[in-house]
View 1: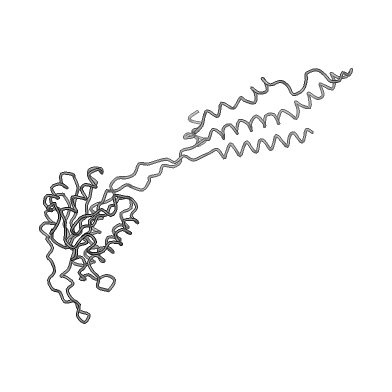
View 2: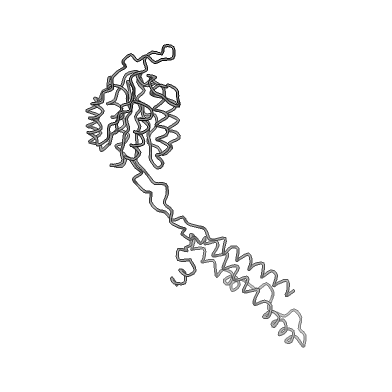
Length: 335
């Protein structure tokens, strides 16, 4: 039987509602249990009644056998169709599941420095960071991404989600100073760890972008890094900023010595948590850093292979309709 099913390509055929096959003998049971439509007594007695009965029986046997068989076959096929035969399709791999990434973006006052170039024009640091991060998000299909911003305080804008379009929309809606003018790097790491600790170990990643020094918050960066390491959260730190935008005079930028970036602290955070430290002085180098992080944090967890169930009930249903039409045509020919 299995060899026959394999030869016919039906080895994976099954019924969703097999109990409906119990309806197959219903017509036979009805014919046996219900009284006849006509009385068995002859309505008219004639001397040659036996001959007429023989001729009628011969005609019923000659033309009614095929019609009766077609009706039984139609009923059987209807029962099979009602039981919903299904066949397993070709194995499919759903979109791969990736890592849980949390993005932390600095919105402190220094992110408003106009010392970056984007598309041939001078822009502030936050505008340049938004463009690069948006491109990075486009490549993270399969990841769950969350977004938090920090200044004087850290705020979660988007929890971990596979809806990257929402993350991009929330990122584009941010502005310099939205979370305060100071910089709370430690609190940003602490909030990210809190959101990532419930996720699967080994897949928790924080990418922190800042252009300043920790000047606010309850947690120091070193204490926050220790907490992240204990919770198995890998932190990649990006020090972002040029030489400071300064004042604009007759179309020229005059730098006036902006706030230094605490590169040493960012390096310690990355080393303590198993991440990487990067320094970006322009938009091109920032884009290269996010491309490098894209390679460091690949899509790592393939999704479980599934086999879709293909409904095959149209086949027996169509055959039942054909058999029914044949039975109707056979009945008309007999009349």
